[in-house]
Amino acid sequence: MSVFKRVIVFTAVLLSFVLVACTPKVGSEDWCKQMSNKPSGDWTVNEAADYAKYCIFD
Image (cartoon, rainbow, N blue to C red; front, side, top):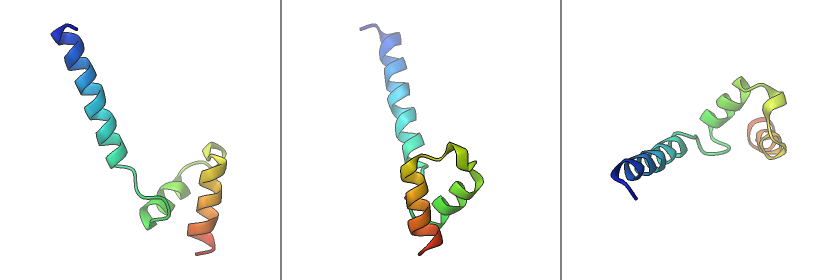
């Protein structure tokens, strides 16, 4: 594997860790705010259920 490919792979892995680390925990106040700002048509079934469970009926 060339050095250029290794740098690309390393950068992609590092970027994925950074993006995952920035996601708030499901059910947290920040997560509820983030979901409130996201169009409800873009929610998954699991997100809708979690939003109802943690943000509405909590």
